[in-house]
Image (cartoon, rainbow, N blue to C red):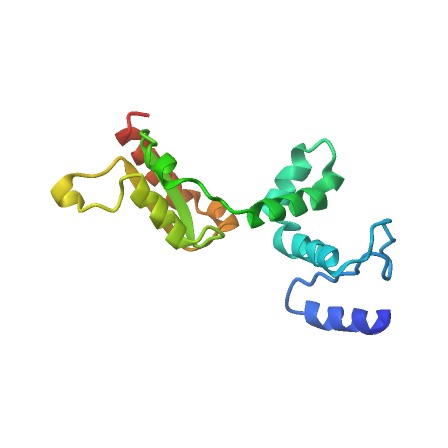
Length: 169
């Protein structure tokens, strides 16, 4: 696709929405950065751009980071971290004695099944009317993503405050 045709596409699409156009490493106005051209690396670049560029996390990083231009590298590292197995032994989780509150979004990176499993390991999920409330709590914030939790303070903070009050914190 020629640059002028790409500009036409972007301009027409931008009439009613935010548009981000992407040039891959060594293409168009983007210089070659001396890294091999590999689909998985280009895919990482695109994932980093689409997932977090311009997000509240990106802005917060730019506000305090000594090297704000290193944002794409950090995103790649976070994506790699997220791809690693989280094999915490159930016995170790169940051994946590401190009152624990898990807060997840209903459209979170953290699978709801995983959050519920952790909640059960922490002693949650019992019939509270019969056995009393457990020291663990699970809050699932509706209509929200992982990063969207930052925009739900008016819902989440009162739940956390009540939890801390009940836990003696």
